[in-house]
Length: 415
Image (cartoon, rainbow, N blue to C red; front, side):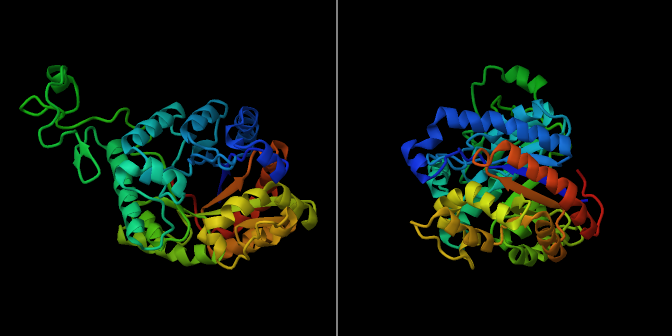
């Protein structure tokens, strides 16, 4: 069975470029953000009712233009969990090259408890320089597009080390750690001296927290996750096969923000990575494909939806620097009208737009190339109204998911 995840991208609504200019910076418009934050609840409740596996959102900062206004996904996740019963909540994902891994471990463990295991955790490397460089400066991190440069290698090093720290904090009663990024405790060599509770921590805390000299030598990250050993972990992947192999070795779920040809090329690399870690799994299992759906009564209606709900962010944001959209996608002129952007959007390979029959065939054809266990559906709410988003979900779950289930040749992945 294919597991469906709805990924809501908070895009603050604007009728056209002129309105976005008049309301600049739209990202700080109180009424429009309130519309996106509160209105998302209707979509999330619908996802719960329709039987989706999960709902998620992003961690992106400083989007003054009103695109991807998602600085704190964990807070939204916790609220969504409170208004739903079955659907999992999570992020795709925390950008670990610009995060504090201890805080991520704490926040996600609490979310796991609030949901009683009804959550997932996503990690990403960080490709947006405006905020990755600012929030990751203390780590020496800068944004990168997987170009094998020195900055790219530094970004990957920070990402992998900090993910390891999150997992260590989740799975051990206490941790100590020393690298060029972190010392835990600090200072590491002497420990933390003069801790007033040292006597009681030695008796009541985790074994080894207090050393023979009375200094703090380890720390205990609390609480432990509700799920043992931890919630499911997803990793965003645009174009880097190294990230895919890494996910395979670690048992994480890569989500491919890429054309089907790229995703199909990377699928075997995930299987190889898993096999190198002693996990023998069939192609597609434990992997996810990301798509932007627009389903209409007719092809023309779907193209109109793409123009109205997706063209703005594609023209001004996606087409600017995402490698998955640069390859084989015509450049979008600065003065292009929305209707002129639709063809480049569809040619990117990331959208599935058309009538029900056309979208179903698009998904089936792609799943025959890589029978992914997960499909992540991105919707630009509130640029896309809630009723349109819900209608797309209803059609996908009733008319398209059953056809994908027939293509997937294996049983369920462990939840």
